Amino acid sequence: MNEEIELVMEETGDRMKKALEHLEHELARLRAGRSNPALLDGITVDYYGVHSPLTQVANVNTPDAKTILIQPWEKSMLGTIEKAIMAANIGLTPINNGEVIRINIPPLTEERRHQLVKQVRNEGETAKISVRNARKWANDELKTLLKEGLPEDLEKDAVEKVQEMTHSYNTKIDKVMALKEKDVMTV
Image 1 (cartoon, rainbow, N blue to C red):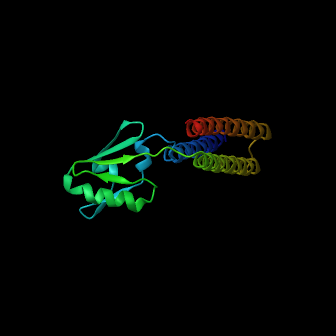
Image 2 (cartoon, helix red, strand yellow; image 1 turned 120 degrees about the vertical axis):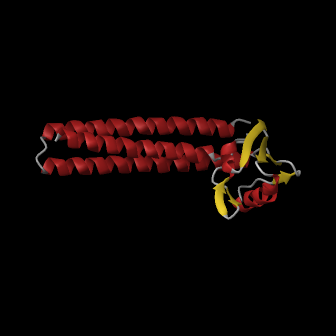
Image 3 (cartoon, rainbow, N blue to C red; image 1 turned 90 degrees about the vertical axis):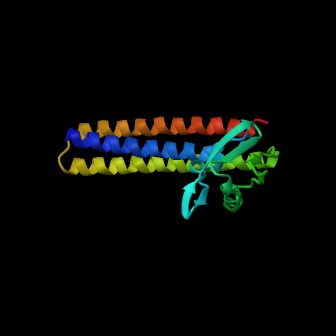
Protein backbone atom coordinates (compact mmCIF):
# COMPACT_ATOMS: atom_id res chain seq x y z
CA MET A 1 0.00 0.00 0.00
CA ASN A 2 2.90 2.40 0.63
CA GLU A 3 3.85 2.17 -3.05
CA GLU A 4 0.32 3.23 -3.98
CA ILE A 5 0.54 6.24 -1.64
CA GLU A 6 3.89 7.20 -3.18
CA LEU A 7 2.39 6.97 -6.67
CA VAL A 8 -0.51 9.23 -5.65
CA MET A 9 1.90 11.73 -4.07
CA GLU A 10 4.17 11.69 -7.13
CA GLU A 11 1.26 12.22 -9.54
CA THR A 12 -0.10 15.03 -7.34
CA GLY A 13 3.31 16.72 -7.28
CA ASP A 14 3.53 16.43 -11.08
CA ARG A 15 0.09 17.98 -11.53
CA MET A 16 0.90 20.88 -9.21
CA LYS A 17 4.28 21.43 -10.85
CA LYS A 18 2.62 21.56 -14.29
CA ALA A 19 0.18 24.20 -13.00
CA LEU A 20 3.10 26.35 -11.82
CA GLU A 21 5.04 25.84 -15.07
CA HIS A 22 1.97 26.76 -17.12
CA LEU A 23 1.56 29.95 -15.07
CA GLU A 24 5.20 30.90 -15.63
CA HIS A 25 4.84 30.25 -19.37
CA GLU A 26 1.66 32.35 -19.64
CA LEU A 27 3.15 35.21 -17.63
CA ALA A 28 6.28 35.24 -19.81
CA ARG A 29 4.04 36.03 -22.77
CA LEU A 30 2.56 39.10 -21.07
CA ARG A 31 4.17 42.31 -22.21
CA ALA A 32 5.60 44.30 -19.31
CA GLY A 33 6.87 47.28 -21.31
CA ARG A 34 10.21 45.63 -21.99
CA SER A 35 11.16 43.65 -25.06
CA ASN A 36 11.21 39.92 -24.52
CA PRO A 37 11.47 37.21 -27.22
CA ALA A 38 8.81 35.23 -25.30
CA LEU A 39 6.25 37.77 -26.57
CA LEU A 40 6.51 36.01 -29.93
CA ASP A 41 6.09 32.48 -28.55
CA GLY A 42 3.20 30.73 -30.21
CA ILE A 43 3.64 32.52 -33.54
CA THR A 44 4.01 30.03 -36.36
CA VAL A 45 5.30 30.78 -39.83
CA ASP A 46 4.44 28.99 -43.08
CA TYR A 47 7.86 27.59 -43.99
CA TYR A 48 7.48 25.89 -47.38
CA GLY A 49 4.08 24.46 -46.47
CA VAL A 50 4.98 23.51 -42.88
CA HIS A 51 3.81 25.62 -39.93
CA SER A 52 7.00 26.14 -37.94
CA PRO A 53 7.60 28.17 -34.75
CA LEU A 54 9.16 31.57 -35.48
CA THR A 55 12.29 30.62 -33.53
CA GLN A 56 12.94 27.74 -35.97
CA VAL A 57 13.08 29.98 -39.04
CA ALA A 58 14.76 33.07 -37.57
CA ASN A 59 17.04 34.38 -34.88
CA VAL A 60 14.99 36.38 -32.36
CA ASN A 61 16.82 38.65 -29.93
CA THR A 62 16.51 41.89 -28.00
CA PRO A 63 19.25 44.43 -28.74
CA ASP A 64 17.75 46.85 -26.19
CA ALA A 65 14.83 47.13 -23.75
CA LYS A 66 12.44 48.56 -26.35
CA THR A 67 13.23 46.50 -29.48
CA ILE A 68 12.87 42.93 -30.68
CA LEU A 69 15.02 42.05 -33.68
CA ILE A 70 14.09 39.13 -35.95
CA GLN A 71 16.70 37.96 -38.43
CA PRO A 72 15.41 35.14 -40.66
CA TRP A 73 17.76 32.39 -41.81
CA GLU A 74 16.55 33.11 -45.36
CA LYS A 75 15.75 36.65 -46.57
CA SER A 76 12.87 35.30 -48.63
CA MET A 77 11.06 34.61 -45.32
CA LEU A 78 10.89 38.31 -44.30
CA GLY A 79 7.42 38.91 -45.77
CA THR A 80 6.02 35.64 -44.44
CA ILE A 81 7.31 36.36 -40.94
CA GLU A 82 5.92 39.90 -41.07
CA LYS A 83 2.48 38.59 -42.10
CA ALA A 84 2.54 35.94 -39.36
CA ILE A 85 3.27 38.57 -36.68
CA MET A 86 0.45 40.79 -37.96
CA ALA A 87 -1.94 37.81 -38.09
CA ALA A 88 -1.06 36.85 -34.50
CA ASN A 89 -2.76 40.08 -33.37
CA ILE A 90 -0.47 40.65 -30.38
CA GLY A 91 -0.63 44.42 -30.62
CA LEU A 92 2.86 44.86 -32.06
CA THR A 93 3.74 46.20 -35.49
CA PRO A 94 6.71 44.69 -37.36
CA ILE A 95 8.99 46.97 -39.40
CA ASN A 96 10.64 45.21 -42.35
CA ASN A 97 13.75 46.95 -43.69
CA GLY A 98 14.69 44.25 -46.24
CA GLU A 99 17.36 42.73 -43.97
CA VAL A 100 15.68 42.19 -40.60
CA ILE A 101 12.35 42.79 -38.91
CA ARG A 102 12.27 45.20 -35.98
CA ILE A 103 9.46 45.42 -33.47
CA ASN A 104 9.44 48.52 -31.30
CA ILE A 105 7.80 47.97 -27.92
CA PRO A 106 5.73 51.04 -27.00
CA PRO A 107 5.66 52.15 -23.37
CA LEU A 108 2.64 50.96 -21.40
CA THR A 109 -0.01 53.40 -20.25
CA GLU A 110 -1.11 53.36 -16.60
CA GLU A 111 -4.49 51.93 -17.63
CA ARG A 112 -2.83 49.14 -19.62
CA ARG A 113 -0.57 48.31 -16.65
CA HIS A 114 -3.64 47.88 -14.44
CA GLN A 115 -5.26 45.64 -17.08
CA LEU A 116 -2.10 43.52 -17.19
CA VAL A 117 -2.07 43.22 -13.38
CA LYS A 118 -5.67 41.93 -13.54
CA GLN A 119 -4.59 39.45 -16.20
CA VAL A 120 -1.68 38.31 -14.01
CA ARG A 121 -4.08 37.77 -11.10
CA ASN A 122 -6.50 35.82 -13.33
CA GLU A 123 -3.69 33.56 -14.54
CA GLY A 124 -2.56 33.08 -10.94
CA GLU A 125 -6.06 32.17 -9.81
CA THR A 126 -6.32 29.66 -12.67
CA ALA A 127 -3.06 28.07 -11.51
CA LYS A 128 -4.34 27.91 -7.92
CA ILE A 129 -7.53 26.24 -9.13
CA SER A 130 -5.38 23.63 -10.92
CA VAL A 131 -3.45 23.04 -7.69
CA ARG A 132 -6.70 22.64 -5.73
CA ASN A 133 -7.97 20.21 -8.37
CA ALA A 134 -4.77 18.17 -7.97
CA ARG A 135 -5.33 18.16 -4.18
CA LYS A 136 -8.93 17.00 -4.63
CA TRP A 137 -7.82 14.25 -7.00
CA ALA A 138 -5.18 13.06 -4.51
CA ASN A 139 -7.63 13.09 -1.59
CA ASP A 140 -10.16 11.10 -3.64
CA GLU A 141 -7.46 8.56 -4.54
CA LEU A 142 -6.46 8.27 -0.87
CA LYS A 143 -10.11 7.70 0.16
CA THR A 144 -10.30 4.93 -2.43
CA LEU A 145 -7.13 3.35 -0.99
CA LEU A 146 -8.64 3.63 2.52
CA LYS A 147 -11.70 1.68 1.36
CA GLU A 148 -9.35 -0.94 -0.13
CA GLY A 149 -7.71 -1.53 3.25
CA LEU A 150 -5.15 1.24 3.74
CA PRO A 151 -4.62 1.93 7.47
CA GLU A 152 -6.40 5.12 8.56
CA ASP A 153 -3.28 6.70 10.10
CA LEU A 154 -1.35 6.32 6.81
CA GLU A 155 -4.23 7.92 4.93
CA LYS A 156 -4.37 10.87 7.36
CA ASP A 157 -0.59 11.39 7.08
CA ALA A 158 -0.83 11.34 3.29
CA VAL A 159 -3.73 13.84 3.32
CA GLU A 160 -1.62 16.15 5.50
CA LYS A 161 1.33 15.86 3.09
CA VAL A 162 -0.98 16.69 0.16
CA GLN A 163 -2.19 19.77 2.05
CA GLU A 164 1.43 20.81 2.71
CA MET A 165 2.21 20.42 -1.01
CA THR A 166 -0.86 22.50 -1.86
CA HIS A 167 0.22 25.26 0.52
CA SER A 168 3.79 25.15 -0.85
CA TYR A 169 2.67 25.47 -4.47
CA ASN A 170 0.18 28.24 -3.64
CA THR A 171 3.03 30.15 -1.98
CA LYS A 172 5.20 29.67 -5.09
CA ILE A 173 2.33 30.89 -7.30
CA ASP A 174 1.92 33.98 -5.11
CA LYS A 175 5.65 34.74 -5.43
CA VAL A 176 5.60 34.36 -9.24
CA MET A 177 2.53 36.61 -9.45
CA ALA A 178 4.07 39.25 -7.17
CA LEU A 179 7.24 39.35 -9.28
CA LYS A 180 5.26 39.76 -12.50
CA GLU A 181 2.98 42.42 -10.98
CA LYS A 182 6.05 44.36 -9.83
CA ASP A 183 7.55 43.97 -13.32
CA VAL A 184 4.36 45.23 -14.99
CA MET A 185 3.96 48.22 -12.66
CA THR A 186 7.62 49.31 -12.95
CA VAL A 187 7.80 52.28 -15.31
